[in-house]
Each structure stands twice: as C-alpha cells, then as structure tokens.
Length: 285
Ligand code: NAD
Image 1: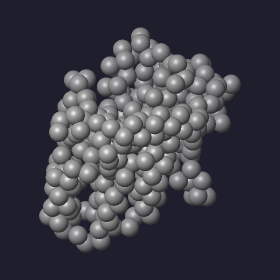
Image 2: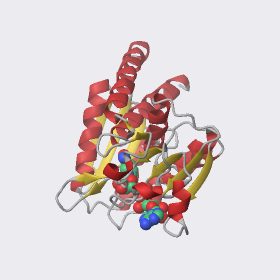
Image 3: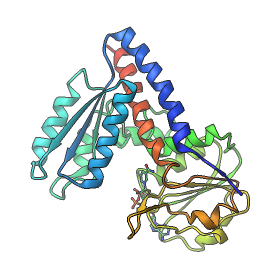
C-alpha cells in the first residue's frame, strides 16, 4: 500500500511560511505584495480558479486585484491594461487566466506581461531561463510537484523519471526541473510507442495528460512514486486524475490523490512567486 500524499497539508505548511514572510515584507517596505489577475469572459472553470486565487492571496496578506473583462474586449484593450499594470509599482505579479477567447492571441498576451511580473513563468524569457537553470520564477504546477517530492523526502538524483505529457505549462518544465535534480528523464506523449513499457521502468512517474484513469497498475513499477497532475471532470460530476488511483495505489510506494494532491500546491506556488517578485522589485528600486 502506498503512502498517500496530502497536498493540503504540505500546502498549508508552505502558506503559513509565506504568510510570515509577507508580514515581514510589509514591516520592511510598508506595503503588501500585489497580484493582478485578469479574466476575460465568464468561463465557469476559470471563474472558480480566479476566485480561489483571490481567496488564497487574502489569506496570506497579498493584495489581490481582480480585473474582469467582457469576452468581446479587443486584444489591443487587453494589452493596454497589461502595459498599465506593468508600470504600476503596487503590482508585483500579473496573471492572465487562460484560455482566452479565440480573437485574442495568448502568445501576444504572455509576451506583453513584463517578464519580472510574470508569476506564471510563461513568458519566453522566463521559459529560457528555466532551460539554463537560472530562473526567477518556476511555473506553478511543476514547482508544486517538486515541493511535494521534497516534503516527502523523495530523492530524484539518479532515478528513472518518466513524465507522460509534454505541454509547455506542465510536462516540459517538469522535465527540466527533474533533470536539474539529476534525475534521468524520459518524456512521453501521444505519439510515444511502447508507452506502457517505458512507464513501467519509472522510479518516479509524473502524469499530466488530461485523460481520466489512463495509467493503470500494469504500467507502474512496484514501489514507484506516482504523481498525478491530471484533473478530469467525469460525467457524474466527480473529479478524477490521469491515474487509476484504486488500482495503482497498492503498487506504488507514494501516490498523489485527485483532488487533494498536486492541485492545492499550484496556487500556493503562485503566492510564493508573487512574494519573490515583490522582494525582487523592492531590491531593484
Ligand atoms: P495539454 O492538453 O496541454 O497537454 C496534454 C499532453 O498530454 C500533450 O503533451 C499530449 O501529447 C499528451 N497526451 C495526450 N493524450 C495522450 C495519450 N493518450 N498518451 C500519451 N500522452 C498523451 O494538458 P496540460 O495543460 O499539460 O494538462 C494536463 C492535465 O493536467 C489536465 O488534466 C489538466 O487539467 C491538468 N492540470 C492540472 C493542474 C493542477 O493544478 N493540478 C495544472 C495544470 C494542468
């Protein structure tokens, strides 16, 4: 039977530390770190994420600016708002909730956010910095996975790490972070042949594909650490991960549940990035 990771417990611990650091920051600089979250349109899933981010900011003492636009806003208007926030010294982090309506280029939006306020770490400059291991911000979800591995004392060095999924926001940066910790990393994706066999070799298996219960027990090496990033809404309204938890849990040594595993860490890492950005801005004033 595997030990079950509690993202809630780890997240609460990290948030407690951030709260203390935010209080010290306030004492030193006479202001709180500020995060601006922009939402375009009224996608219900995005609205939940934005609300949770706002609540989390308030809990640790970060000032949260929620900016919502009608889905018909032009790209130029949105970019103008981002430029205004780039110049606003009370705003340390800027996040634009994705996805955006089709008439707005996500690429242009991400590139317009100042790289020193890009707390999602999606700006090409920050992506490049991650590649060479000299970064300011880490993307929140992979950073949350690393924090969980560290909390549960999982050694990465020398281990066979297999990541299923190669998205820019999870799979690719995850590969870099594990490589940086001296793991031997293989990235699988939708065109990978013999994915089952490759997955079964993993000491650490990270799954981020968005397919409910895709990874089954026969794909997991006994004793492996299994990290499930997937969040899938089933037809009965329940949430499921990319890993078939009930069959894999008896085989693994450590496993993250969905919900309550990686999920709670993502927003926590956003808070951490916002605080780092605020410290950096004060140091450079
Ligand atoms: P994405 O759709 O951008 O990328 C999916 C990746 O999975 C692609 O690289 C694709 O090649 C691969 N893939 C798809 N089907 C596959 C298959 N059958 N076999 C092998 N590989 C396959 O997804 P994403 O944004 O990386 O998100 C992945 C999952 O993680 C989703 O369920 C998403 O909701 C979840 N997610 C969770 C958090 C969190 O906070 N916990 C954050 C981001 C994403």
